[in-house]
Length: 79
Image 1 (tube, rainbow, N blue to C red):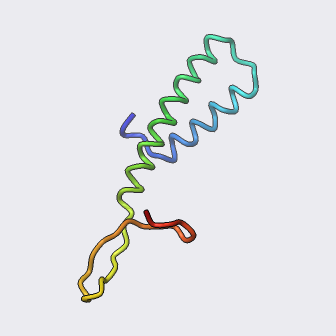
Image 2 (cartoon, rainbow, N blue to C red):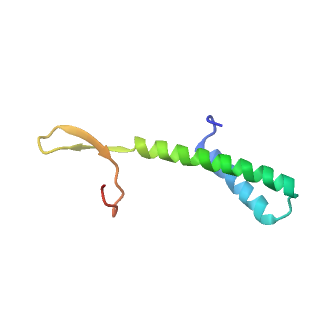
Image 3 (cartoon, one colour):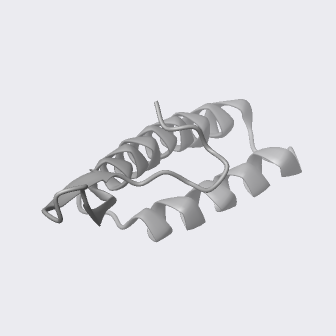
């Protein structure tokens, strides 16, 4: 699972949602793909958490030295 790309997981999740929404799967198959979807969703969440931790912006402090700080989206309060 850890070698799956985020985009591949997302594509598979979309397929699972479509299949479940279609309502044509037998119950056992629905449970199987639902479990797969939960696993993929958790993998995507971990991937996004890791990506968020990696996003940093180089900035200069008052003395001119460079430092790093977490990236903050425009309109978000820095906590």
